Length: 183
Image (cartoon, rainbow, N blue to C red):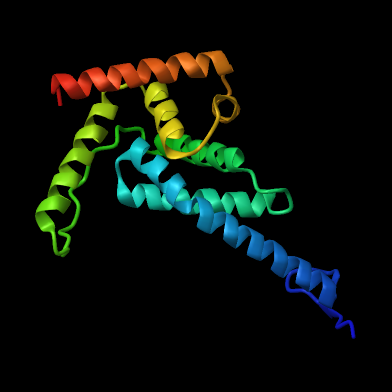
């Protein structure tokens, strides 16, 4: 039996089969979200060094992706492009350099280890702040996801050769900064 009804905010009749297709796309989107949310969040944390801003940008990115591209096959490079654009939008609106914020106290059993990891993480984030914005962005994308240089080039809109050179130089500069102890 096919149940027909009118969908909410829609003039087309909704059948049982179209509702099943919708459920299936929601399940696909949910699986896509669950698989990639942590990597996208890690990328955003590396770029912004701000937990709350990273959470907001991640949520905004997945929302934009769902609103505009829900009918297409899942594309991780498209999601990262949306996230980069959301970061650019935020930077334009705010017009200032992101500062590191103090984390709230963690009540874990091994607080000393947690503190050491946080300090090292902050050290790396501060070192990344010394990089040029495009170097920091490329390095964060390369580290956060399993992207090929070709995919990174598609996300950033520059040539593959340029991506390779810039990532290599950014890694060398970051390594030099970390070993010098300039931070």
